Image (cartoon, rainbow, N blue to C red):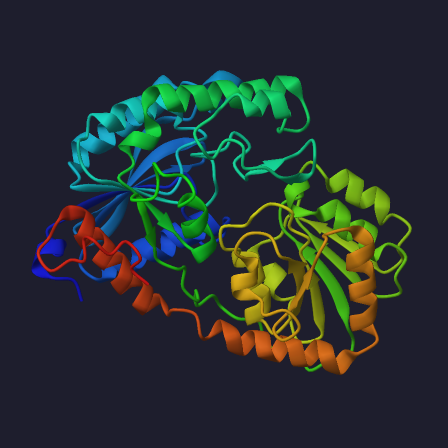
Length: 421
């Protein structure tokens, strides 16, 4: 439980996505905030709901949303400068008067106007590294043009975005990323962040390669989030599943190429720019079902022992909740060695890591697994067991409270130990 001192802190959480149905960042922000509130901390959340900035406050024991303006959806207001976003942040700071700000994402919607306002708060600021937008114009240390990992901007450079044409292989889009990154640099966004919360050892080590970030890192691994688990299906049939955003670095097209023509039920969940390519590639597959966007619960209902989940991620993942969810359901996960994924998957025992991440390599791996149902179930069982060894939500909460105390300089906190767990 927190000390009396930390209970007096006022935390402003900035999380554009904030619910259990959104991606990993929104899910994590929601679960962490719920835990912190349960521990007695005063937590207010500036988020986006129905295209409006909303400050979620707990008043008289009830969560009360306070609308602070409409999100600007044009290209300029969405990516570069939004007066409404700056105003929303200013109002939130005035109402909350935080002693610490925890950022889960401000790169879209909030824009540089929010960064300028945050500079005036003069309080410690923690940023959880859900993606790499603080350091990379394409957010993922990934070049869409080369379809490969790229760390050229990690040292603070911004010009490589244009030279590399990393965003969609487009000079126009990449120039936009360059302008956005230059704006972040001009407003000193990196400077106002006191500490970067690294959810995996991979992220902690990666940021440590930049001398300017070495002393601004805290390693607090994400926990085993207790999502509602699907009912285990006692079935003999096997299926191959992909779920997630259909963008280049998530590998949806690679998945479709890998399973094209295989005599096995195929389930595809998600939407995005590559959806039409996936539909075209699997159009002649009589056993393929393309569901489009589905809720987390609907996807979970299709994950069970006997399921082969293929996630051909190309970018260096910061943690990967999708892999975690599939493993927890007892599915056999086939993914890549990119980023923090090898911290979840013990190759050959709790999943399969494909290297290099090419369609033919995934295809041969899936075919081998289809011929050995016992191995698929054995890997899935070991995967589900391994997930339970991750820090619990309670242990993670304790570690985050310790990190907050450290940043606030409270007595007894381990201020010199940035590697909390």
